[in-house]
Image (cartoon, rainbow, N blue to C red):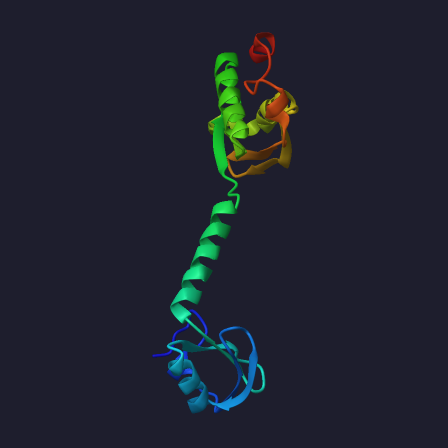
Length: 189
């Protein structure tokens, strides 16, 4: 009944002798495994191998279930504090109209305001493949419009029939601005 997810406990310990640490953290000395198990059982605790590679291995007398519970709580708290960067995608066409461009730019702004990175894709169809510079112009215009709020993480790059660019939000850019892309006159351009 060997477990792979943690230290060996009680009868799972294979060493003949161990350096024993008490419940209070004090060193009790070298013990045979059966004697160390008896010390742990007398205190209604478990014998846990905390340093298996030491010579002899170090074992501690503790309540293993409580120890495992505390470790799980710490891991859960660490996962809560972890920042997950989301990558959103917005697709454009090389011959996008002004109104559609403004709408999609505002969607990109909204994603950036929430802290997400945005992958911008220009999709080429048919004969549009002969003019990749039109897609590049759209990406350059977008990068220029987003400059106060985002930085270009990945420069425009052609992959098959698509051209990609990755932008990331600038920390604090939305705190001082209104976050909706500036004034009305800026939105129309």
